[in-house]
Image (cartoon, rainbow, N blue to C red; front, side):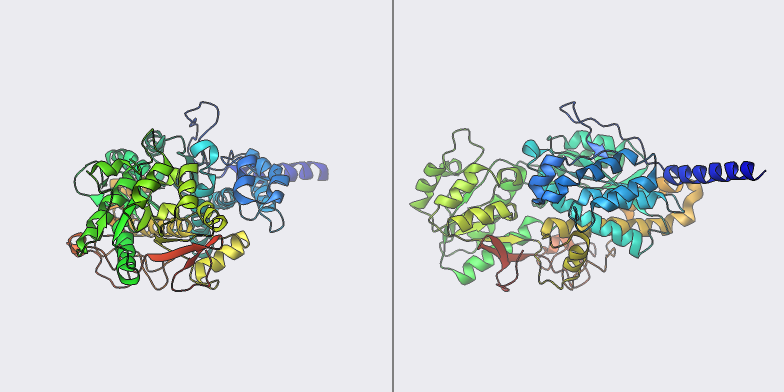
Length: 522
C-alpha cells in the first residue's frame, strides 16, 4: 500500500514538473534565414548569437568557456522550463557570462512562462547577421535595453495586469526586414514589435505593420520624417513610432555648437545613398545654410562635388575625397549609414583627415573611438542619449544586471521603447476590460487598441532614460524634444515639458565623453 502511494506521489510530482515546463507555450517560430541554414527567430528554444560572434562582441573568454550552459538552456526551453531557467541562470552568473543579453531575455521568458496568467508576447528585430555577424555588437546593445526593461516590467512591476512579457528575438541582419515583419505580423499572439534598428529597415517594414495593423516602435531609426515619400526622407505611417529623436534635433544641436564655438563656415559631408545618410545630409545642408553669412556645405546635394565623398560610389577613393574637400572645406562631417560606419573606408578617412571632424550618431561606436585614438584625433558627435554619471538609474541597473559592461544610446532608447510598449499595453488593457465581449479574446483587443493609445496627444511615459525627462510622441509618431518643430505639435502633441533628449559627445582617448562633462565616459 505504501509503495503504491509512493508511486502515485512520484508520478504526480513528475506531472507537476512537466506542467510547469509546458504551462504556456509561445507561438510557432519556424522562420528560416535567407541563407537557408539557420533559423532567424527564437523565444529561447535556439540561440541566434553564436559562440564565436558572442566572444567577439563581449570580449569575455568565460562566455565561450561556459557557452554549453546557454546551449543546454535553449534545448530545454519549451520542454522543461525549470531546467531551462536553471541553465540560463547559471550561464549569466557574475563569474561566467553576465553581459549576454540574449540569455537574459530567454531567462526572463522562462520565468514568465511559469506565471499564473498567460504572458504577453512581443518581439524585437535586430541585425545580428549583418555583414557576417558584425551586427552582433549593435544587436546586443539593443537587447540589453530590452532585457533591462523586461525585467523591470515583469519582476519589479509584476507585469501588465499580472501578465508578464515574453520577448521573441528576430534577426533582420540579412537585409530581410520585410520578410521578418511579414513573419511577425502573421503571428497574432505577438502584440507589438520593437524594431527595426536602421531607418532603411524600419521604412521598408513599415507598410507591412500598417497593413496588418501592428505597432512597431523603433529604438534607433533617426532619419528625418517626411509627410510625402521621396528619396531623401523617412516615410512613416500611423503604426510606426520612434523613441530616438529624429536627426533634425541632432543637427540643430550640432549646427548650434559649430556656429557658437568655432569659426568654421565651410564644411564637407561624407555620406552614402542610404535613407538615413541622405536625410542627415539634406537637413544639415538646410540648417547650416540657414545661418547665412557665408556658411556653406561644399559638396551640397545637386552639385557635381556631391559625388566626391559619396561612399556608395563604386569608384569611391578616400584620398580623392580628402584632397578635393581639403582645398575648400574647413571641417568634415561624417554621416554614413550604420552598416558603413565601421568599414575600412570610413576608418581610413578618420585616420587620414587633417580637418576638424564632426559626426552623425552612426559614428558613435568604439571602433571609431579607437581609430581616432590611434591617430591622436577627435570627433564631436550628436547623439540622442549619453550616460551622465555612474549613479544614473539606468547605469546602476546595467551594472547590477550585466556587470561593468558599458551601455550606450542604443541600449537607452531600446529600454525606452520597451517601457513605451508596456505602458501602451496597460492603457489598451483598461479599454479592453470594458469591450472584451466585442473580441474573440483579450489579445485581439490589445493588439487593436495599442496603436490608438500610443497615438493620443496626451499619451505619456513618466519614466525614461533621459535625466528628468519623459516620453511623448509628436503627431507623426516621432519622440518629442525641446527642439521639435511647431508643425509636429499640432493637435495638442508634445504638450508636457521635460522633453529633454539629445547631447553632444566627443571621442578622445579611445572612448566618448560628454562635452559639458569631460570626465564622464561612455
